[in-house]
Length: 476
Image 1 (cartoon, one colour):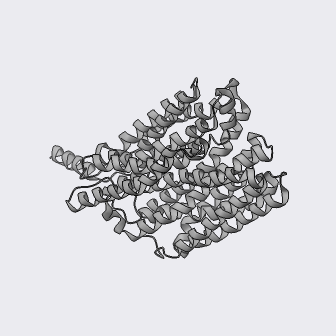
Image 2: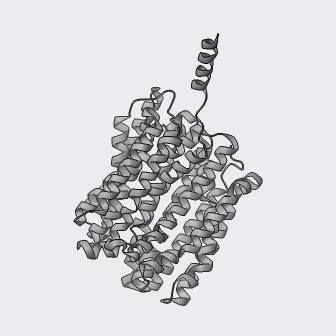
Image 3: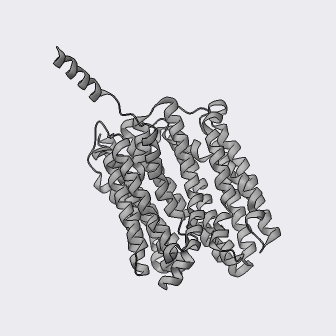
């Protein structure tokens, strides 16, 4: 009788769904923060890296682009591997690899070694990050999921701003004479703590019906993203050689081939890397479209303001980083109120956020036009704070909208698609707005180049606001 009761309890425990507790949520959010911080942390360290390693401008762009390209190209595959082999296993493996590649970046003896280590670091990030959202989707429900998704969005936005601030502080601190190397070495102890916590607090989840890897889809997605992002990120520094134009011309053909292969696999009952049927979800489709202009404007602004404040206004790395502190602080506190506001007002919170961000960007453009070259924390404070509030009302909510109808069995695929869209758009922002800004400097000067770029970003914010009017009024 006792054995029967014991076996019944064991069977019930085995059937019970995994639960992500508070410590587990903290751990996966830590894993989400690391890759995003590292995308932006090098912006203010690039001048020091170039001087120390005698790196040309094109090689320095590869330090940023190599990470972003590997990260974007492999994200969906990382999500699929988590569905197949277990998201906790991939999360821990990806985090360990991220720590090792961060150490390799910090110890790099030459510029090209650093580029190679950054590519490997991007690949490690692609294994780790999709498991965060997939675990939240699979191991939470109801109000707990809404809260966890809100915290994920807050973590993502805060990490992107904090990365730039932290980079400036670490470069200036020159801890034990490490200089720029500390922006990578700081990851190592954080990863060790994360691995310790993950082994104890993150539940294992996987798709109940795992599918084999979609080889043709994986290759064609990689080719499509590389054909678009590689020439845009390297073209200006390389002088726009023939290969950049050929690559851009090949992009639509590669993208069409990818879609055709995925659609055929979907119709044949197999699970492609990116199932076209997933885009039948209105919330996912419309949310992804909004992520593009938001992320392009965000990353473009972060890159441009770092260059303008250091090379144009003569600010130190610390001052350039701290000029964005009001944006980070306000973003954090406003994002905490996001779930309550969404519960009351629905997705119109996103529209209001776009309007508020537009006011903030306009104020920063006005400050740059009136105060240049005396531009710093005080001059940017009102605009940066208001823009941060507007961003906080958009990013966490958009993330929730995109994944709100994705079934838990496809959580890894859904989160991989969303983060790939975000990461590709972040890389596009640096490539497009960064190229626009750097190209305008010679013709109109640093001040007018900055103001013009901010006005272009303002147009992107307006587009995000208009797109938000097509969102479902409530989030499932």
